[in-house]
Length: 336
Image 1: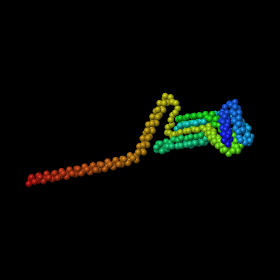
Image 2 (image 1 turned 180 degrees about the vertical axis):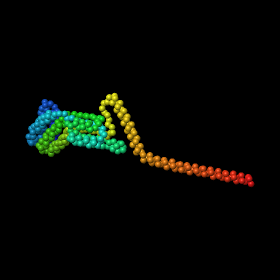
Image 3 (image 1 turned 30 degrees about the vertical axis):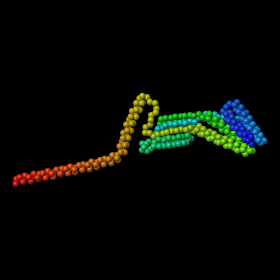
Image 4 (image 1 turned 135 degrees about the horizontal axis):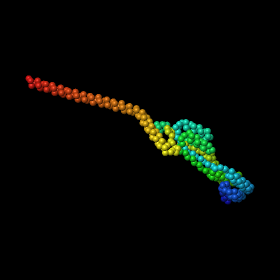
């Protein structure tokens, strides 16, 4: 029993090694592919011979045939891959005076170009942001129409920053495809071995290896789908802001620079006066309230002060009258 398990392990190891050789052969020369084919056939044939029953012996040449045919298919498919697999990403910063119109037209253009909005975030429009709004948009545009869409964005807004990045994933794509085809060959071989297996321990071991291979196949297929999506649909990231006055980004001469500085200063003065007027009008309720309080305080203070003065004057008058009466009484007494 242990001898048969050892033979089964050797057989499975031979399948894995053969599959890896096939994957390497898909990226190599035709001479390397022929050598690998012979090794694959020998390994699979020798592994098949070690099966305990005659049914396994009958399956051996079929396994070798599968290896040769599948490897030839890999070489043909790999040679047919044409063109580079390029992932393009564009990022832009845009200013606009018509915020709502810009967003509406931008989203409409994305749909007309065959793309879709992946993410859209808008903030601002409150007193905290002085009613200026900003946003961030991520769009996916068909790669062949990317340049046209970028031109539309530049025409609709004032682009103050733009960056384009291209990543070549051709090698990774081809390697992933080759590995996927090799895994499918291994899956077919394991399925054949599973059909011919009679011992329960053999069936369990083959099924375990088959489960692992299927998991790797799904992973590679998912990776290829991701590559296809990134290659076929370019990513465009746009952050846009609402402004009253667009930034001048073109190269200027000396005279134009002076003109621009003067324009900036005039704009700054105008904005400063406007902000002061806005703040003053906004503060009017508080100014009126404090004015009423101060006025009441002043009037009340005057009344209190006047009352106090009158009291002092009245007191002095009474004192003077008393003194006058006393003087008259004294003079009268002297005459008597």
